[in-house]
Length: 175
Image (cartoon, rainbow, N blue to C red; front, side, top):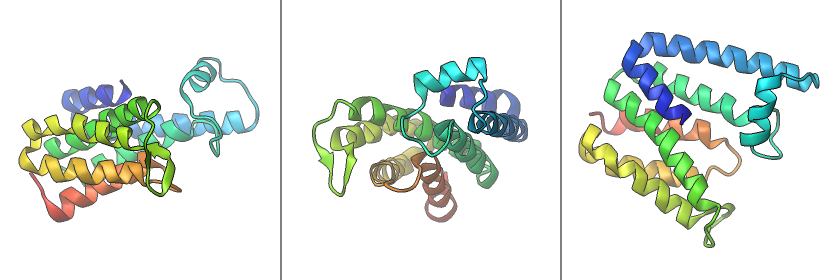
């Protein structure tokens, strides 16, 4: 849901306002992390952390912080609206569906027992409608980012997926 909200913000306010909003959200996230590391309660954010944060993260708000950082990276290094929207869609919908489906999956990805083949297939499939936005480059991009998500073993996929999207559009195939 947050990624779709980001896309709406981007479409409504443009790239520079989007970057400012994401930057300010990152500052807020940094303050929250700092308070949580001091064992201070942040009432509304505590509830979100309990409901949505992964267990055993390196610090509180690990996922959301890198999610915001990934979105900022996308908007900073890409300038084409279609590329930005597509990259955020991949980060939000592709990664989200891979988690939802992958949790019920039974076939582990080779060399990464924390991810499932079912999750990777779901990631790839839900990214295919991007063909309507960016054309045929949606297929290799969906494939590369689904592999990136599956094999982000030691690195945070909320950061590696945006890096792959940026590199893809900058080096391989713009729209």
